[in-house]
Length: 453
Length: 187
Image 1 (cartoon, one colour):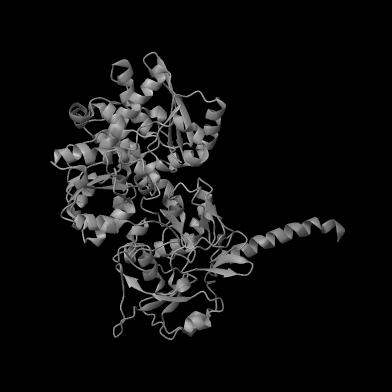
Image 2: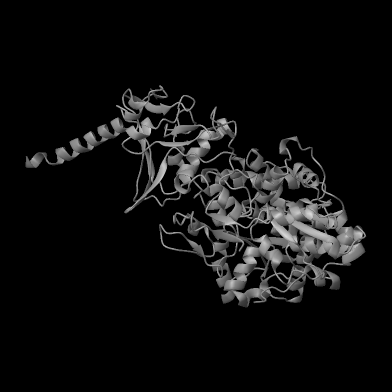
């Protein structure tokens, strides 16, 4: 169970069913709803939407503590609890942090740094990478790395794969595979199109695989010594980390994935004063990242990052305008043609999983002439993910998404490196460990075959 | 025209789905300053204390809230002077309220609930008991809160509306006059 609805709390309003992209919420109006786990993609949009809270008037004074206990939520949490909720695995994280024999490595996704401060009263979309890193250091993680680094690796791997598919006649269009809810949706509903998915793992899993191999080597340790935690804006990342194929190093890539909200709970539970935290850097080398890595957090970001690098891979020249505004935006499906030397690269971006159905139908019918399509399940990409801080009022939703997007692009602009292939730590890991993109070892550790069911 | 009687919010059970977005919004805007509630759930450290109450009945559901009665039974019943009329609205002073329930008894609509009282992000304890102090929680039409009644704004189905009874009476008078004009030829 990753996402669930509490039958005792659900009022049957079915507002969650309106936002569920997988039509997985079943039940009659006015009656408690259930989740069809075969259909559910665990995106957590229902968790974000639900307002049916544990109420003193409706459920009694003791209900709150009971529900908190049932859900394994730290006792220090005092915020409202709602009928739709996601699994809380903080006990596993606490246990690992307390275990002196475990070398703990944490990574956090790009969208976490533009939202977590909201849980401490900051304005919507406040950018706080320094405080985030400081909090993770204070919690006691041995290494505070960053998902933005493996996002840069993803670009090297997925970008190379795309160029190969385009120039050597592979299956097109190629779909991104960063979003585990999207991958699950494809497996559930269009398994015949699975060859279109990029074989590259998601940044989370690439990070996990690197930390337990190259990362372990850097510490003079083995994969067995490492406990790998990821902090994600996403409820589905825990599901992805539990997939049986995600252990190519011989160890689980990621041992536990928690959400942005979970981390805020943990910070409070450990008595850390967020406001007093002084900015800290992410640890080197696997926490050095580019603007290309950080824009993975918004819809169109993976595409833009891929084009920044892919342009140079194909033409040998740097891209004239680094900000590929043609692929930005928030519409559910948008396409553009990017001039890459002699090649007209035809790309599409899908955000909001419901919008992918006509796209998939068109791919099936052979009526969609595109090379590369990015798909993200949540409304505006990971900044609007199911594990992000939950809004008390939906009237703030537009501003929340817009501010988190703006903060992501602002962060991209302020970083020293803005193209994945220019990241010195990327150059180094390929020199020392991965050899070259799509090499044998890269394929073994960082790529996978989905659709095992 | 000068406003002479109080407005109120009314729900529509034909539109309401029972999602409680109104209750959460009501709590949120009333606790921004007093209990440091921000935009997200994680900023909340006190129990949710709404001032309107989602009510289920055989034919459906809708929120019930104060009508801001002109001859308000709650105001008349309060022996502590904790309820007063300010700018035509019936307002509870939570600091003065002792939780005696006289107003609850008096209200014909059940628009008042006794709920825990919190200040500065914490429940306020009673002087001589472990239980938190309670207060008569009822709609104040978001008095002093920017943007007016939050429940009306957040409802995803426009199932709540702010009623200005005098303005609505006048509007109905005009509609009645117009329809009477149509019947003139047959009189």
